[in-house]
Length: 254
Image 1: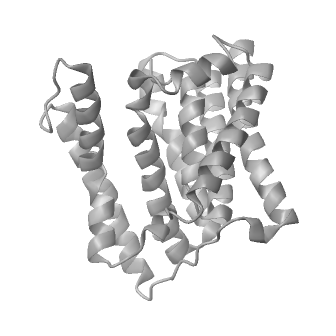
Image 2 (image 1 turned 90 degrees about the vertical axis):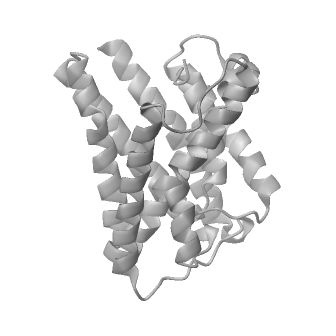
Image 3 (image 1 turned 180 degrees about the horizontal axis):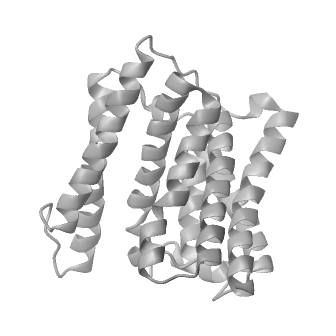
């Protein structure tokens, strides 16, 4: 349990480091970040129900993928990587279909190409800081050099679209919850859902209850922290870099 506790706390500390760096700089100098103006629609409750329907469609398409009914895989590793990326686009396509028909901008899912270099560069730097904190607290296999070597390997890089699109889906639902119910509920509801999402698998694997509760608490805490920062920065690109590199560090792709 001690090892598990240190692992969970290291994850919170790593994401917390990245988020607090952004929040600290923003408090000192709010104009340094390219801030997006997101228009709030009059029919905000309608958009919430449409968003819920889109999320259900995403899960349904995901089940089609699980059943092998999307683009078939192949033996070539490059083709497999391409197919995995295309299948992820199909799985998350209800989001972009919704944006198209609702005539809503990509900034309503916290995506903007303004100052892309700043976002990618900042994301990389705070990822380095977060990883340093993670390895100082938890250790684990490899280290910073290992993460930097692995981040450009095809077996890991092919997972970046999935990681990024997960962030898009969270931002998609978060913004529409904010329109309808306000920021506090928009943070609380996803945090609770993420905390509960791992329960069935953990129970099926026979995981001890204290460990399940700790993992749920960590998941909820990270979700609250990231969503709060995401709401402030109105961007998921830099956070996508952190998410990807942290997934490599914790071995999520193995």
